[in-house]
Image (cartoon, rainbow, N blue to C red):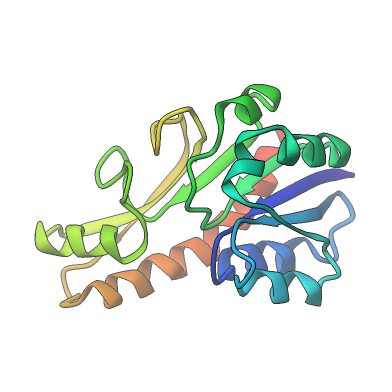
Length: 187
């Protein structure tokens, strides 16, 4: 049985989608949800699937507290699903090529510090892009610079607000993220 750990900071819709996808799987199990936000909706979402949650602060992420919890769980994959803090290099080094993230744009464009959620979609809109998409990538020591695993795009010429773009991106995330995770774990 392959084990996944999810990291999320907020609503947790991507995390829940992953938990739904693997809920009855015989080969993959979500064994923990980590969050830096004690008010995050992802906590309630995890409870529905009886997945343990771990709430931590920035200090516990940067010292060995979170790393020790991860080592106990021994995940085959760590998935950042709407996790807004910079992921520490000491954890990346402990789990090489086993930490992935989803970004709501076609990297290398619209990535980096501060580029998340509606900030990304607003920038895409202001630049009058005809398409955007999602990128699933390995996590490195720099925001959104890890090796790409998967990209797909969507036409946004009809979109007039960042929220409309966000809706199209959300649909791509829901459709592709769990499938890409499954393929990644299969090797």
